[in-house]
Amino acid sequence: MYITAVAVWSDSSSNMVIIAIIVIILKLYYSNNIELISPIHDKNDRTFPEKKRNNQSKFLFRNLFVLRSQSFTVMYIATGLELEKSLNIALETGYRFIDTAIGYNNEPIIGKVLNEWISAGKVTRDELFILTKLPCYGNRPEDVDKFIKQSLHDLQLDYIDMYLVHLPIGLFKNGKSEYSEMELDKSTDHLKIWKKMEEQVHNGRTKSIGLSNFNIKQTQRIIDNCKIRPDSLQNENHLYFQSPDVVEFCKHNGIILISYSSLGMKAFREAAGLSWNNKQLPEMLENDVLVKIAKKHSKTPAQVLLRFINQKGISVIPKSTCPRRIMENFQIFDFKLNTEDMDALRNQDDGEAGRIVRFQMIKNIEDHPEYPF
Image (cartoon, rainbow, N blue to C red; front, side, top):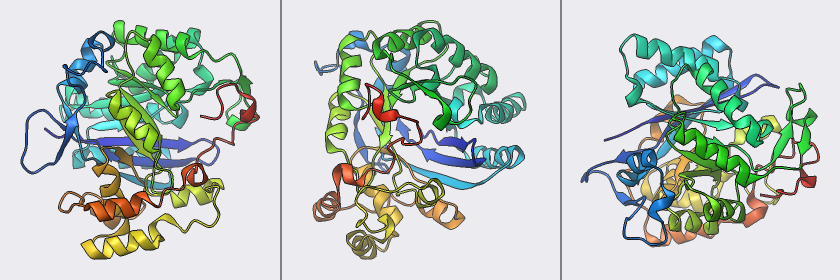
């Protein structure tokens, strides 16, 4: 059983839209042509308490297996009509997992396209897996209901498959559209917010809940105090910022780790003026060690990076504007990196110096008690 995915993102300041066509492959039964990582939850594993997992999550994750996954992103300046066209193409190709967020400003377009497909009988709701996120300017318990209802309305859905807390900090929007103009809400209370997230599962608005951009300490605090555990964590993770402690933490706690910035997001970095702290790092896809390994396997550097991350059991969200490369990114299951390859690539990790996204676009973010994360 294969479930494919599309992640959609837009920046309101530049009208830049990123469509990340994610492939998160799920498996219910053993298949010889796919490499199995491990079940998300072993009922005999006492480190993963049964009482902490909701019934919908049992269906979605305990009975399924997360396998090697690859994703594809198309980045370009787009209008609403162009986004509709791209989403239709993705669905026609077979993608069924859509990752978006209120902060991406595109849920109404996604809802329109999905409604057209469902109404026309091209796809059923059960065949789709829709993930969206609580915006940081809604990170207050009294706002969770409002924003998930807004997402449900805009997406034209009766329920969401997975709902994430997008950031561990809160903002006051105050009528502003740019993060640089919003004010910090220093009273962010993760436990109170999570309690309201759990209510969304109980009232049927979402089947599962998770986190995005949370660190280990923040995630552990939720695990220690929750009734429903986080099902996923979506964080930056790539060749120069591998976060092995986060990877191990997620595996130990049965959390699906989804990596963004997997290929270094060069185009977005240049457009947004972002860079890793270590200015000496070469462009990710031009890394000498990576290029050498790619030549050995007759693969592209991007394919090797995707394979590297996937062999560690992580789902990825790379970006590309090139149709040929989008197709090439599918072709990562016909080879395997050996121990020498994996070790060489692990040695490229530069820790915090390799981080790209530090959310400096948020005014005075350093003053928030939950920063850094």
